[in-house]
Length: 167
Length: 179
Image (cartoon, rainbow over all chains, first blue to last red; front, side):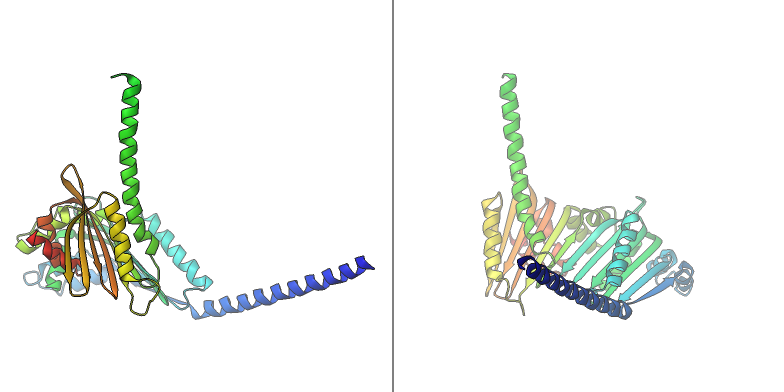
């Protein structure tokens, strides 16, 4: 009698815990599925020819540094992610972006972190005073941006331009 | 001197160096400890960023002055606590905690400024009469700033940095001109 009572209690308890697990996983699926649907990504490709074309409209005598910057800025790829930063889709995408940037072996220039924002600024320098590749990665609560670009920008001219715009 | 005496001397001096470096790391752990926490912002500017400025030459005097200051740096770490809306950490308590921890290691006080309700403290770490690190601590009732500047630092040139970097607390570097 004791054994059968114990067996009934165990079966009842097991069924109860299994039901509870099923409910939780169902809820979890609904939650992530909904979040995945609300998470959207946008891809923008700016070919190098666009920035090079824009440089044709800049007067070399008036704005030599801006002309150089636009001419050698090169193409860039911008990926934007909007939605819930806790969703599976978000984590998968941002992890993929991080791996992509890591593979490029760029040097970290600056890292900014706070409770809900991480910003990475990276660049590659072949050693001839020019910027070869650059990456800008922002991950905030609700928006993530990855900007990847290839260029032949002269660092001196870029600094002059930044200096001009900041003064 | 016998061989075993030499070995003992070398190991003592090595352990001393390692111990000092571990202590400095302990202070830098403050940055990692509060990184990403609510109310805190951390900024790390890598040595590579400063290397970029060493090759640039222009005729602009202001830029060259800033470039001189930047080229002697090997890294900057900034920790900012803005406690508006966050009651988890007390800025004054953190200021005292970091200040005491730094003084216990090999950092020496360079300058203390009382600006209203704001306390500012400069600390330096020297190695063979070369300043290798400058710490700037700013503490008030509602904010705490901890800046660590690493490199081979000339204090006279350092004040130029406040002109180029718009960072809360860094404007106190101008006070070093009077030092």
